[in-house]
Image 1 (cartoon, rainbow, N blue to C red):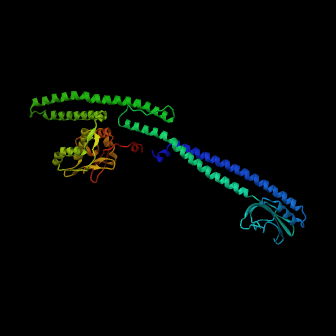
Image 2 (image 1 turned 120 degrees about the vertical axis):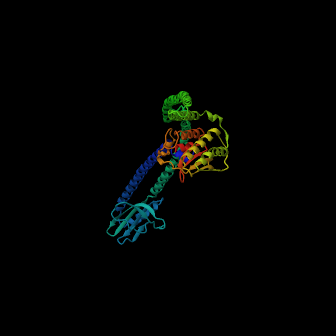
Length: 459
């Protein structure tokens, strides 16, 4: 269970969405508090500056420098700024060295940096105004509003740390809350794989929480009950038809064969009876194949799995088909790696390899080549059977796996379209993967002899 899986769950995404929404709400609240607080503080400072301006304007200009020095003496916190300049903006009195160039003399309050006369290296953020006392003098009044800057930094830190902590906690809680639903999904996936393999008695797990997953699982379980019933009825009908018709067809073949023997070799009806026997043999072969597939899909042989040596199976299959390959002048070659033994049914695996070899030799023209390879892959042994036949069209690579389906290239070659269906049933019984792909000059049939993972099925 990785973080990438957890992050794709709805629980994680909803938790993350709520965390983002909560962070936006907190940011909006802090912004409102900052806007209201700073606005009120600025209004109070501006009101105080306006009152001080009115008081200074009432004082005689000759007494103004002394009054400025007296006011500065009472300023124990050093937050007030007063200065008096002449018409040429030369300093007369106060704690400001010069009038800021960007400060208009229009009695309007501005916020800008002032340089104190006694500490010019550290400008101070102030609310300040400039007015004319007389045509020859300019009065500058200001107040330190560094608290606003500090308050702004506090709010900024709250934005940063509060938002970061909210997102981190949201992601952490989202990941933690996603573990349980993801485990339930993985359990549902495991059960779905068993159902895909033919175990229709399996049902999706449910809990007592009765959440949306339980509701969905209950709906699917109800559907599986109906599917199991219908599949059982269809399978029973097909098996019964194949089983019941095999006996009368066998008797019919025996009657025709006896009649053929009684007529003798020169009788004119001999050819017709030979054709009838061939058709009956074809029907019996199809019924045997159908019953064989049904037997394999039953899954009861899984309990008898034993240690299987694939090298031995491959060698036996190649020896079995060597005479057939020689008759068609086909080069049949075997290449095997030293692979580990696996758990399975040796007879069924031999049957699967034989079916694939039979197809490869059938579709390979005389003088061609069939290669049988047992390779050691990254996940386990792999069987590759390559031929130099006409190949399979991309559109037919899936449909050839269906029962009775035969591609356009195979109509002239004997067969019933059930060989690959038997291979599919055997590989599914072993939890192996079977696939068809293009080779250099034909087709490559591959059996991956390791349990296919549910993750691959999900993706």
